[in-house]
Length: 197
Image: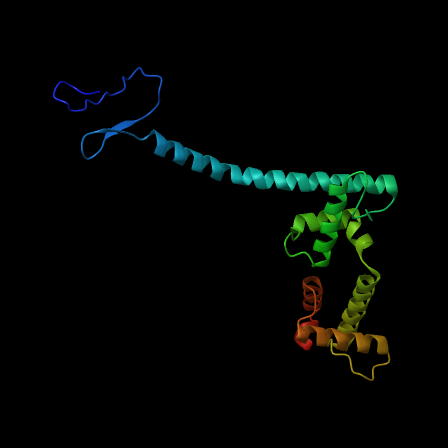
């Protein structure tokens, strides 16, 4: 609004105004609202406070899918859900993703220790193992027993259990070539094999 001299008059909001804006004068004495900047900072605070809730929702959805997996086992007698499960394609995809995470071939969505523990306790991990993985774990256990008995995980080429000797050599070669999966490497480190090679 202009006064008689042509200067712009500033109207200050009354204290009984419905607006919750804060007003200040800028360098020239003109009224400036701080409402927008406060609104942005409140929005930023809201975003920050919602982040943990979003993660919590994601975790809850994982738990809900795990519950469905347990129900599937009761109904069908197996944890082997087809990747293209007709009644619920997203559930089939979820199970397929969990299998990849268990094998260590899904770096985009790794399992948390709690998730891995839940899948293990319900028996899904054992059932999802391929024949190769089951054989690998059997041989790992045999190598651990060999190390306990002989004090080293380096099996001589002429050892009486040729399957173990050949398997151990192959694992050592895979280790040096960087071909072991993360779970395999962790298992071999756990039994002390890597330090013996």
